[in-house]
Length: 127
Image 1 (cartoon, rainbow, N blue to C red):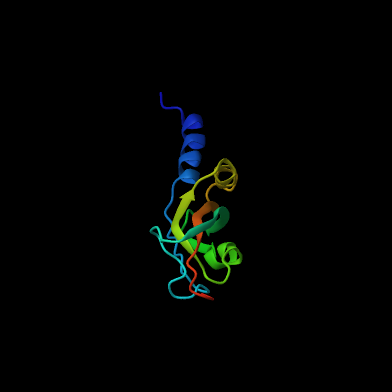
Image 2: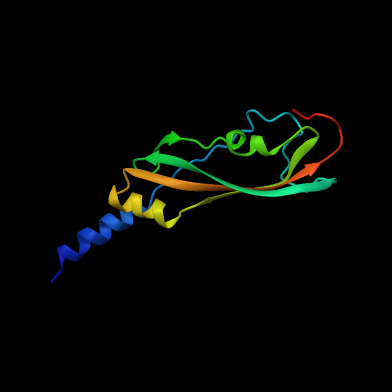
């Protein structure tokens, strides 16, 4: 005999954890030549790792909050400095999953992590 009592919670959990989303990161606010996804020659000033979040509704169909890389990383770059070897990771943290499960996928947050080296290129101001 088929047990519907077990099917409903497992289906709700599967639905809450599934979905699709599109994450668009634009370099708005950064000057041309200020952000690189590869290594740049120069003196490394610091290594940064910062996090932000993205928020979606209805299993990722509606975007309600896009992360802003400049708001997160812009304060780390000084005159004559660039972001080098930038890595961007979208992940599903425990709290993200918990919120998605509690809301049955109506609200789905994602954690966005930026990691980069701040490199001094000694070319004057890049802002």
